[in-house]
Amino acid sequence: MTTAACCAPTMVPAIPALPASPPMPRILPGVAASGWCQGARNPIRLRRPVLSRAWIRMVETWTAWRAAANERAGLRALATLDRHLLRDVGLEDRVPPRRLPSWQDVERALW
Image (tube, rainbow, N blue to C red; front, side):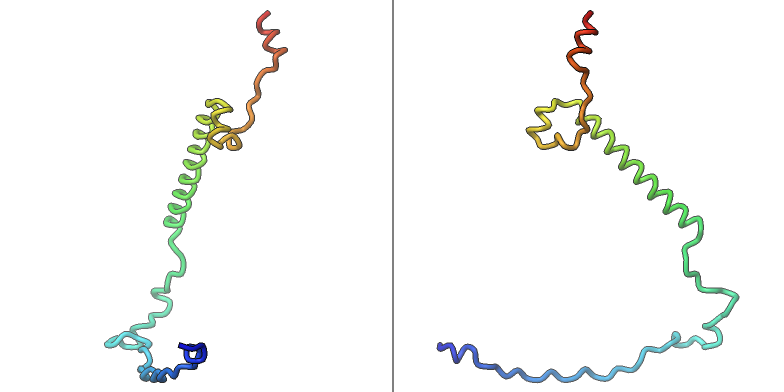
């Protein structure tokens, strides 16, 4: 096959247009238009009820607090491990630096 033959434009048949569909009805079939719009008697609720929003907010707050507590517990557990082990595993940067007593404080404590 030559380059001219493989790059020649190929004729594609035209896609027929989609058939015209009737528009969607604005009200349900069998429902009178006067009964559909009830006005001020039953307004459409655009927001969740207050208790539902409060419950969702409380669950989100509780979940965030538990995640932070688990994170602190994990950091405390990592802080008990040896620095060399943490460095070998690659977790040394996650643990806050330890404040060890200086050698002078150790000597004072021995006396």
